[in-house]
Image (tube, rainbow, N blue to C red; front, top):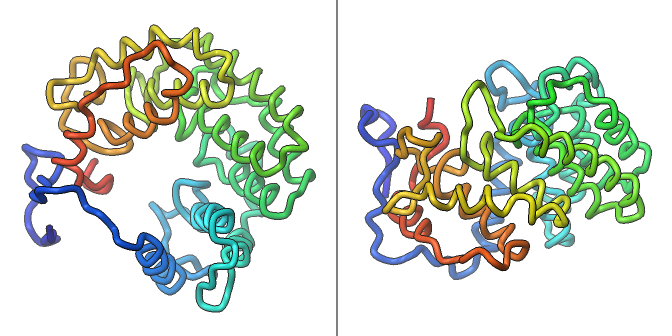
Length: 304
């Protein structure tokens, strides 16, 4: 389904109807992967000045900017280490995108705003620890998270402690030798998060994967599975908020027109699939797949 960028946005709906009668199936996903990464390195190369400035900023951790692309190539390097893209392997591209001035981003000032996946200092040092197998960079991350000055109520994934848990899990996977030190910091973050329930962001109790309850729950459970039993009742209450079409509202009792990873069924699907093994007593039959399939052309950029 093509989209006309000149067509006025319809305010009544915050998604685009998917008119396909069957699910999209890719004969060779690797072909599409290559097309995408070739386009990225050509249109947004690892050079300064950076061509993809987001709201006047270059360094936004895993959310936007060169470090976010570096993370893509780090993930590709784990699955396809010998893949050649414009004469370079994924690890080489990752390094190129990580060496674009991220070292100039201060730790303390940045952390007062965010300790989640948008924190450039935490994200870039996490990726450098993984790529270079560097305990020095790992310790920079751990030291900062041991001494957080950010509001204790900051728990969501994008800017809060759930995002810090995500970064720590990435680092734990790539540097298993540091698992003990990482797990200690994870435990302290989880204790703060659990004590802050209900989880509020910008004055509202959001439900979705990025700013809301299911996102925080997911990172706590994946980071510390032994805490899953403490969150089973919360998970059940979130499942009860699913509407008849399979979607979830942005906040309880408010609109359910958003069908995104940030708000709505797509983010819930990712989260539920990830935590399902840790909740064997919770029924896994949900209707969110229908809602996402029928209205899956929603773009995050269409949301104000």
